[in-house]
Image 1 (cartoon, rainbow, N blue to C red):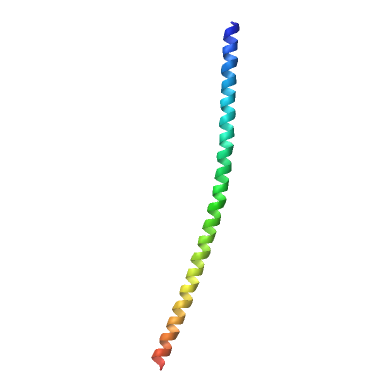
Image 2: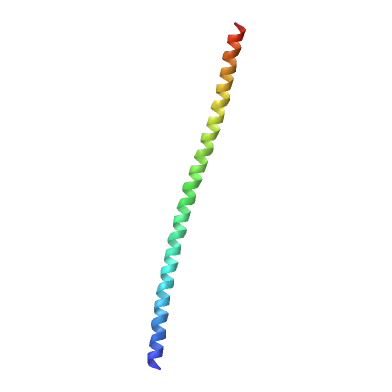
Length: 75
């Protein structure tokens, strides 16, 4: 009977240790996910800024080309 209790306590101790390891690894994964979400958010924001700047430059470029063609035709 005493050996049975010791075996149960030993198994419970192993289980407790494994649960602690799982919880620790889950916390590390949560931290990693949080960092990656922040990095992705920054990249998406920067990409939106680049797209906006490209749109403005395209609009300005087309306006300049229209004006140049107007001057050439008007001459």
